[in-house]
Length: 393
Ligand SMILES: Nc1ncnc2c1ncn2[C@@H]1O[C@H](COP(=O)(O)OP(=O)(O)O)[C@@H](O)[C@H]1O
Ligand SMILES: O=C(OP(=O)(O)O)[C@H](O)COP(=O)(O)O
Image (cartoon, rainbow, N blue to C red; front, side):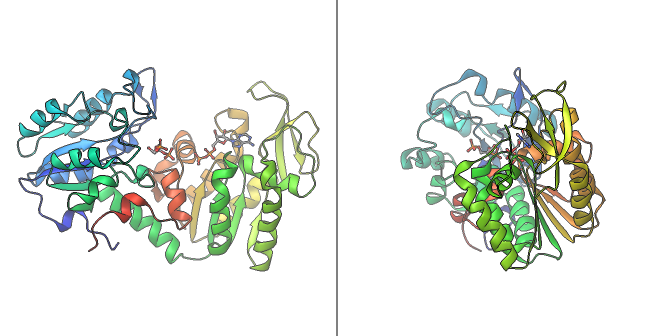
């Protein structure tokens, strides 16, 4: 990476403002997955061990400039404290006199977490006044929030204009792994794109047709391709504004000699529930009042074969509604093939990572990215503002 990292600068005795992404899933006030907190431990421990005064900042959810009690970072501070085995102080405000006093009281090796930065409307507006106020708390800015690197906000981008700015160790690892995978991919390189957000995935499919050898389409995206080819798709998910584009992609892949696969059979259901009636049909067999919910057994086998014969696999988006057991087999088969392949496997996207975790296969993957939107934008080849703003080596 051509950006400086925290290892390239002196941190001892310095006040270091570290942007992390502690936007963790919560249910009934409890953290349900602390991966994003655990992944920042190398940077935080490095700073503690090297005598820095650590000021952490993160967003949670989308409070839109208002204080939302359920989105306070109190639970995240407590979890971090457990993981570090030392106290983590917590500010109840984003910025202001009380925060400044808490920062002034920090000793070397102390850790303070600021309140949810999105409680201040200057955060998402990238208000230079807020960025400057953050910068005045510190001597150095470290960005370890890969998950928010595609956002140009006051604590991810703005602050870098007022302080020396370097990447944290998680940021460095994400950019290194994703960059190596995509810039000089080992071949055969297989990209698997599924999930439900057709609009969000269109650019990544386009890019993958250019750089991958095999492109496997699954999940809710499939039906836009089926409809474009003239099939009845019943009640299945579709983006009617992308039908022409879907045909263009199939054509483009053919022209470039790429193996572009859409499902050959699917699981359909008459309801969006575990007790629904299901059938396995070919792509031309969806009745008008049923919907496609998972890839079928022939597709599972076909996709698993391609994955097992790949040197690099990049997977974004589940193959079906894996949250409901009867519709989880396609996603499970893909996760299992990723676990078994000797190729290097990279998973981006919150739901695919959650699926791998659910099937107990997460530790068999080579890299699970902490960024969903960020890893997609990176894969599309877009510049990430939170990275661009960092100092060059
Ligand atoms: N055939 C389908 N119909 C409707 N929803 C689907 C289908 N296949 C997958 N999904 C849903 O897609 C969601 C994940 O999509 P997405 O957010 O695009 O993935 P990711 O978070 O991995 O990027 C899951 O909640 C899953 O239930
Ligand atoms: O969870 C996040 O995004 P992701 O679900 O795309 O990984 C990041 O914390 C960014 O959050 P945002 O999409 O509200 O800016």
